[in-house]
Figure (cartoon, rainbow, N blue to C red):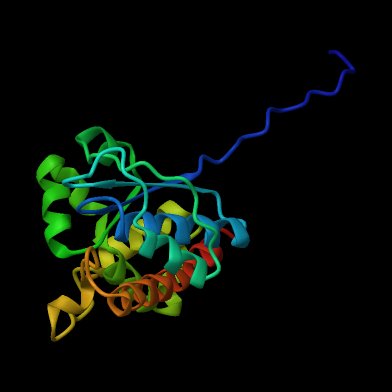
Length: 201
């Protein structure tokens, strides 16, 4: 038997693939994408975030208002080109976070099995925040967390007003509406990032 020391290859855990979705892919979904990407990077979370639109303004950059809100929330805006949502993009994702319940329906119509891992971003934050301490015992990875939140969806009480889980479309609306959207997304991103950081430990 050789005295040479055998070096086992390092197993690299693949990054969780997160897709954010809205309509035009120039306001809400890229804002969520860049907020998540920044927060994940700061928290050391291995995740790849991208975005698309159900009726994308293909090739367009962020609206100036979106860029301004990213700056206001401490995220330096990155170059962006709007992308059309496809079945392939949905299939490649491990988690799809959409702006509204209508967007979730459109995602699932492209790929029915995606119903297991598609949520509105505010819904996912609400559900992950409702996980009990005992439920965290079996969560040892980001994928485990997504599955636990999916299971939680059938048991957690829905909000009295279902629209609470939606993020309104700020396109061509006032600066105040953009600011409200950015605040909602920032809050959801903070909750999701904290949960992902805990799951990744």
